[in-house]
Structures are given as structure tokens and as C-alpha cells.
Length: 227
Ligand SMILES: C[S@@+](CC[C@H](N)C(=O)[O-])C[C@H]1O[C@@H](n2cnc3c(N)ncnc32)[C@H](O)[C@@H]1O
Image (cartoon, rainbow, N blue to C red):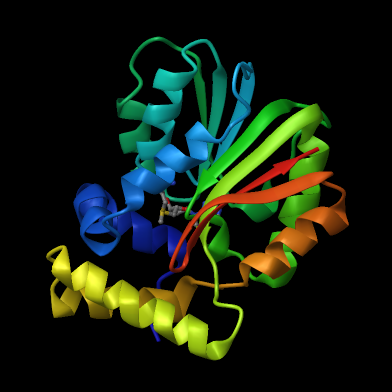
């Protein structure tokens, strides 16, 4: 058991993050594209919240897609947030906040869109449900919540198969045994995987009217929920 917290883990990984994540999950970029591509077409989002921006890989893509949006970026890792901030010298339509998701508070209806990529699985089941309820409140009436994340399999054997196939994928993309073991330790210490079905149910339970999964591969799913 590792005694560092999740923010310290990502602080330490910051400089190598993108290279490591692309080796560990070669379809990472496709997943980010899936998250953005399935946002309602023809719609512009003026006020956006990104949860767990890390070093800004989704944030940069989102900025290209929606150049006029104002984006509020949140992460618990100060080092990652600093790198993210350095990628947005201009134009200035970004605000940055180092904060735990569990401590966030915004006025009702503050955002048109809330996005997140592989960050929410660091919360446990109860905390995820509380966050989903908060996101619904923070969204405007026609707001959209779209996030990519790791989910458990619906059964133990499917979950095990996902992890086995993930390992094959990571190794074939150049991950070392030490790197794979580092992720497995990270998973044991900091990850809380709930199934896709359960999470879609929670989103409905808190009051989202439409919930879908437009993209999925092994553990990774893109979930979209509309208020
Ligand atoms: C796997 S990284 C993903 C970064 C980026 N979104 C991406 O797609 O590459 C997870 C991020 O979530 C942040 N994070 C994890 N738990 C958090 C929490 N409780 N509150 C705020 N940020 C958190 C971490 O610091 C890290 O930057």
C-alpha cells in the first residue's frame, strides 16, 4: 500500500504523464476525440467546467473545438495544473482552481457543459453519486455532462478479461513490466471502478433525462448525460 495521496501521485508523474498514458492506453486520443465528437452538433458552449484537467490534453482539444468558450479547469494536482496553465498563455478565457472534487461549490446553473477525462474514477461510489448530483445542479437547464472514465466489467470475469487485454495492449505499445506494475499499484491505491451500467443508473437517479455511452473499449467508456 502506497501512502501518497492521488494529488501527490499525479504531481510526481506530471513531466512524463502524456508519454506514459499513451503507452499505457494507446486509444487514449481516440477516447478524447470520442468525448468531443459526440457533444451535440451545432451547439456552442459558453461556460465550461473541466474536472481533473491534469496537464491539459483534453482542455487543449476542447479549446480548438470551442475557441470562444470560457473554461474553468479544476485539478487536485498543483504540478499538473501548472503545466495545463502553461499551455494557455493566450487567449485568456481560462480560470484554474486547485481543489478536490469533493470540496467544489458553484452557483446553480453556472455551466453549459461539464467535461472530464479519466478522473472521476478516483472517487468512491458514494462520492461519485454526490458529484453527479452536484454537476446536475451546476449545469444550466439544457446543460450537458460528458466524461470519459474507467469502469468495472459487469461481472468479475469480464472485469478480469478487461484488465488482461489492457495489459496486452499496454505491453504491445511499449509499456515495461515496471510501468505496468506501477499502474496496478496505482489502481489498488487510488482507483474505484464502478460498472458502466451502475453509473448510468446513478446519473438517471440524480435527475439527468438522457444518458448514453457513445464510445467504449475495455475499461474505458465515454458517458454523456443531458439535463
Ligand atoms: C488520469 S489523470 C487525467 C488527466 C486528464 N484529464 C487526461 O485526460 O489526461 C487524473 C487527474 O484527476 C485528478 N484528480 C484525481 N482525483 C481528484 C480529486 N478528488 N479532485 C480533483 N482532481 C482529482 C488528478 O490529479 C489527475 O490530474
